[in-house]
Structures are given as structure tokens and as C-alpha cells.
Amino acid sequence: MPPPKGLPAKGLPDAINAYRAGRYQDCVALLTPLLARTASDARLVLMAAQSHAKLGNTEQAAQFYAKAAELDPQNARMLRLLAARSFKRARRRAPALVLARQAARGGPFDIEAENTYRSLLREQLCLEECEAEDARLLERMKAGEAAAFGVDDPHDHIMWCDDESLNARITRMHGGTAFTPQSRAARRAVPHTFAERIRIGYLSNDVCDQHATMRLFQGVLMAHDRERFDVTLFCYTDDDVLSADQGMRAQYGPIVPIRALDDEAAAALIRSHGIDILVDLKGHTRGARVSLVNRGLAPIQVAYLGFPGCGTGIDCDYIVSDRIVTPDASKPYYHEKFCRLPHSYQANDGAHRALPPAASRDSLGLPVDAFVIASFNAVRKISPRTARLWARVLSAIPESILWMMCDDPDAQANFCAFMATLGIDAGRIHFARRADYPEHVARLQAADIALDTFPTNGHTTTSDKLWAGLPVITCKGRNFTSRVSQSLLTALGLPDLVAENEDGMVELCVALAKDPDRLAEIRGRIAANRFVAPLFDTLRFTRHLERAYEMMVERARQGLEPDHFDVPELPSTDGAFSAGRP
Image: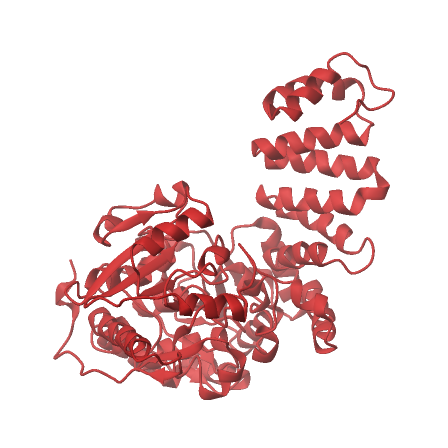
């Protein structure tokens, strides 16, 4: 980088040399006095921004990127986008949104600017603006514009769009590039010898007993039949996630760390284990290593649990699902073949999940006499459609309040403002903070009912509510992610909590609010079914999953291509299965 014209030369060559040598802390130290004297050259400010970014000082980097944008109109759009993303990483979402909005509206349609802008709109609950932007993007999609399918991350896309035909065409990917028919054929053509014991490899970066995925799946890992299955976890979990583990991870079985390895080395290591079935527990979720999966790690590759939908571009032969989340009508929209389990696709750990006594409303700051409607789903799942539905329910039950999880003051204010336009006073909305799992399960029991989100339902959050004994009201959906709660409720023997449509949801909520005896009967049924119905029967679920693996291997041994199949239902265990709880 040449010295900016018109700036004092003293110290600047050293700063430039430090930057080029990767000594970013030295560069920042040398730039500080220069910027104090002359802060009007965009290249100097940009060097400070880049140095802070390299050092992980995301908020300082954002401030310098934003300043550079003011000084360099020609590159302002790009610099504002960098500033917005840096503020977002620093969890400063409000200033990030301002800059992202400017970047998105600062010129022709731009995929990267739109991606950041739309993601922040959802995180900040700017629902009216979000609704308008979704409509604009949907129009482009329906017109067949290729660029429109590269805007949203797949996980962001299913937060608002329940059209499976569009879900299947998303092209944006995290962590790699899409597989090709040639790369898939090459993987399947690699000679492989199946052992007597089926060798299963699970791939994830969520291998911590405090992560939602492992709270669901850890019981399966511990229940696997080790005489019939050789199970290995290939783990690239970050240190900050690992540090939260409270000891259950040690019981999961052999764990092979691959986080420090690049894709080539990680692939070689995984292949050296001779895995028969590689199960990707990530799909299109944060930190996924798509390019690693697409290198071809096993003759059979399976998508499970992490992403509720078609894993566009990810080379998996099967997706583990059930008849509710993936009915026959969904088959044309998946490149994977359906492996449908007899009950719900979702694993649940019924042995190691906390089940403390209920917390009192007084201790939670909730009105004792109100009809409390809970939602503890992630903020990004609260779509405009969801908020409008909640407002209808609150209007129809005057004595009700909404109790939801949102700890960002700006998002809270935005949500209250939107609900006010629908006639809901802010005093009827109570916000909750995040809590440790036992505390969370205890507080859930203080609510009367829970309302689902659409089109992306509660997944772990729905099963947590049911585990706590809280009725969850949902309606039938049009794609995998919008059918999850129906799947869970059905597996717990509560199909009557699944309405046909949103009108039916409102009617059901009103009926329960007016009929405490009926509501009590439902809560009693949840408690009775918790250790009897299939949803939390971890051992039976594991045997179904193992049978699925056996059926996949049987096809492969016969030289048959993967195809759709349903796993036959195994007999239930006699009596309750809660005796194994610690």
C-alpha cells in the first residue's frame, strides 16, 4: 500500500510495513497518532479497519469501515457492507442494520448486500420492513431470476418461505461448493468392503452436552448397540462451545477431533476409519463443512437432524425423516431419498434431560391471574405471519399475555411497535432472558399454552415445552420445517393440538382459555405420555434408527442405488421407560 498523499510521512512507512508483515497490533499502534492528526484519507482509515478486523476487534473494525465509507463515495457501498457485517459480529445489530440498509439500497440489486440486510431485519424484528422485502424477493424468485436464489442462506430462507419448490432451488451455501453428479458418482464408485459391524461416522461441530443438537441426540449415542455398530464422532466443535460441556460428552463414545485439519486432511482421516455410513448432523446450519462432506467420505452419506429440509448442494444419499415432515408429495423437491422413521424423525433424550419442579409466576414476574401464552423460539423464527397470528390470539383472549424470549432492547421495541399496529398494547408482552436448561424447563411450566412459529416451527424448543408439560398449539404446514411440531405432537399422542389452519389455531386457543378442565386434561395427558409415548422413548428410537442404517447397507451390499424407504415399526417396550432416569 503506497503512502497516502498529503499525510505526514513520519510513522506511516512503519505502519505499512507492519501491516504487510501481518503485525496488525503494531500497525494499529502506529496508525493511532497518525489518525489523530489526519483522519480524512480513506486508505489510511481502511488500513486501520482491516487491521482491527484481522485482530478480531470487530466493533472497532466496523467503526473504521463506516468512516472509510464516508470518505470514499466510490466504494461506499462495499465499505458499508463490511461495516454492517463487522457490527453484526460484534452483536451491535442496530448500527449494523442502518449500514446494511444503506448498502442494500445504494445501487443495483446486490446479492451480498441483500443477504446481510435481510438477515438483520429478521434479527431486529423489523417485521413490516421484512414483510415488504420478502414480497420483493419472492416476486424475483417466481420470475425465475437466478440471483434471487443466491440471496438468503438456506436456513434464513425457510424462516419465511414454505414453498418446497422454491426451497429446493436455493443456491447459496455455507462452507463450500455444491456437489456435482460426477462427484457423487465418483464417491459411490470407490471400492468398499462392509464389515460385520456397521461403521457409523457422525460429523458435527455441536458435540457438547449444552448444545441443543446434543440435548436431543446424546441419548442415541449412548444407546447404540456397540455389538452391531461401530460408532465414531468426527468433531470440529469450537473451543467456546466445548468449554460449556458439563461432562456428558465423555460418554458419547470415540470422538476424533478434526477442527484443526483442512478439508483434505480431515477427509483422509475420516476415510481411514473405513466408515460405511457418514451421517452429517449439520446440513445448512452455522459452521457446516459442506466441502468436506462433498469430498466423499463414505459409500453411504446421510443428512440428519441439523437442517429441516432439502440439503441443496450437499452430497447425501438419504435424509432421515418421517411421514409427516416428508410426505410422498415432497419427494420431487429433494435430491436425497427419504428414510422415514415410524414415529417422529426427531431424536430425544428421555434419560438425561432435566425435569425440575415448576417455577412460580411471582418468581418470574408474570401476572398470577393472566392466561399466559409462551413462545421461546429464536427471534429469527418470528415472521410477520407469526406475529399477526399471535395478535389474533391475544385479541381473542383479552385476559392473555404473550411471554417470549428476546433480550435485544431494539428488537423488543420493534416488536412492540409492530404489535401496536395490530391493536396489542406493549403491556401485554413480557420478555424473558436466556436461562440455563433446568431453569428454562422450570419456567416453561408456568405458562398455560405455547404458540408455535411459522413457517419454521419450534424444533428443540417444541420438544422442550412438551417435556416440561406445556401444550404447544400448531397447525399443519407445507414443508419440512413447518411440519415439525405436528410430527412431535403426534408422536406424543397429542394430534388434537394440531389445527388444520390458522383460523383453527385461534379457535383452539380460545377454546382452551375458556375451558380450564380441558386444558388440565391435556396437561395430564402430556405428563402421562411423557414416559410411554414414542417421542421420548430413546431406546426404541435408537433401534429404529439402527434398523434404518441396516436397510441402507443391505441395499448397498446388493449393488442397488439408494431409494426411498420406510422403516417398519418395532414393538414398544412393556410399560414406562422412565426407570433409567438418573
